[in-house]
Image 1 (spheres, rainbow, N blue to C red):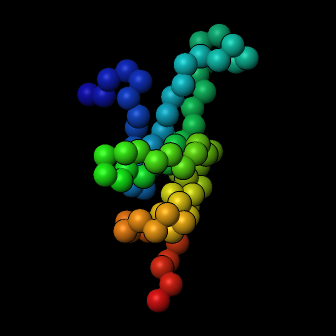
Image 2: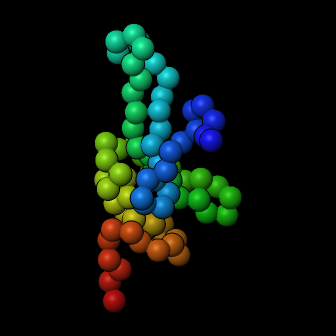
Image 3: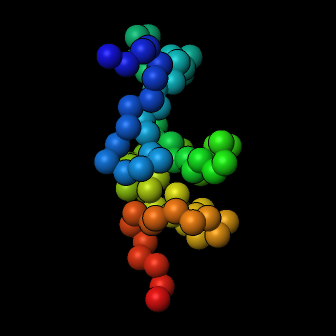
Length: 81
């Protein structure tokens, strides 16, 4: 069982749902949620941002992997041969 506030994962590696605390601009009892992409390299988490869909987050993660030159498998973008 997941603990309260723990991120739920998606079908993409390094992409998870985040549920934030109640925002004062939302109706009482409602919560906002977004999807975050991260890369973990040598124990350090590199954030890629928050997005509306898991596919957008995975695409941003792939672009960050390419820009940093990290040796990680891509999920959406195909590597050039």
